[in-house]
Image (cartoon, rainbow, N blue to C red; front, side, top):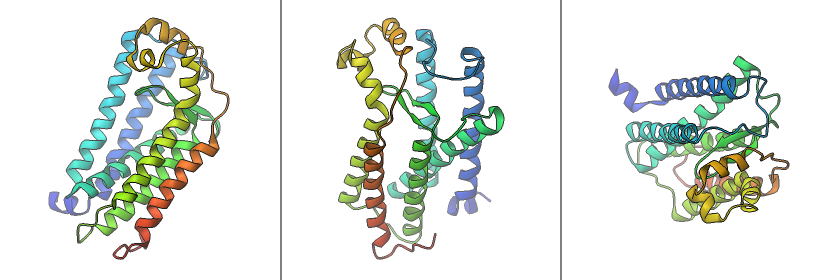
Length: 240
C-alpha cells in the first residue's frame, strides 16, 4: 500500500492538500469571527503584536508543511519541487472553495483579500492567486510527467524565467501596501518590524484601491513562457 502511494502519490497528496485547505479555512473563520463579526472588509483590524507573531508562525508552518510533503513525495529535486507546487496550488484553491461554501465569501473572484504576511502584507483580488495556482498545477503536471521514467530537470533559463516571473508577481501583490507604509516608515523599519505597535496601528488603516493587473499578468506570462519551453522539449508528453 505504501509503495503504491509512493510511486503514484497524486491521490494521497490531493486529499492532504484539500484537507489543509479546509483546516486553513476553519482557522480563518475563527479569526474573522473574533475580529470581523460583521464580515471581513478593509481596513483590517489591528491585532495585538503577539497575535501577529503567532499568525506569522502559522503561515511559516503552513509553508514548511507543504515543502515537507513535497520532499517526502518526490524522488529528486525536480519532482519534489513539482509536488510542492501541486500541493500548494490545491491547498490555495480549496481554501477559497471552502470559504465560499461555509461563509459565502468571497462575493466574487474580484473581491480583495490579504494573501500573505511574510515579509510584508500581500493583497490582491482572489482571482489573482487562483490564476497562480492554475499555472502551478500545469507546471507541476508537466514536471511530474517528464520525470516519470527519467531525470528531466528544468534548464537554467527556465528557472530564471520562473524566478523573474515570481518576483514580478510578488511586487504586484505588495507594491501598494509597501508604498503606503513607506510614507511613514523606512524600508529597514518595514522589514525589521521596528516599532511594531505603531506599524500595526498604521497598517490597520491600509485600504487597497487598485491592483496592477498589467504587472501581475506580465509575471504570469513569463511563467507561461517557462512552462511552454518545458512543454516543447523532447521527452515531455503534453497529454497530462
